[in-house]
Length: 141
Image (cartoon, rainbow, N blue to C red; front, top):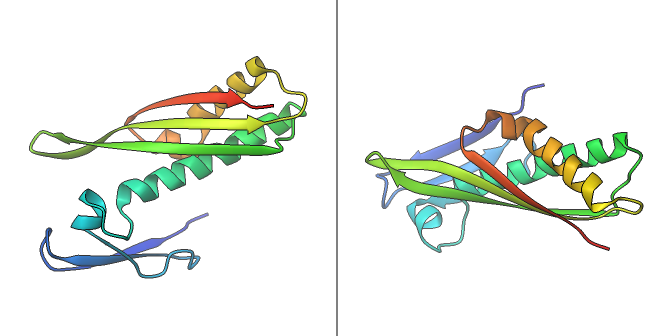
């Protein structure tokens, strides 16, 4: 399976503007630029998109792992916090912290934590990232 996304850019780093699109059309000419990345201008940025991809991938992996144990989540809510730090004269994504809360009938906190740790290490987005990835898992009743 191969999926694509595209980016188009015009101008210099600080005043230029770009758009990001996805093959599925979920994002179509979504604006991004210096101010959407480092400021608070509406639009998206690579770190936000990476966080969305990681949260989605991890959550699906967790659902699968729970299902293999006979547990069906009523709800799983995941937040991925992506850290962009200045490093070596440039910038680097240095960490991703996942926070997940789940409502899973019949689950114990230990079973949920074990499944979440397995998903954290096993989801394809986690495997591709070189950043330090951490996570908090909380089973809600």
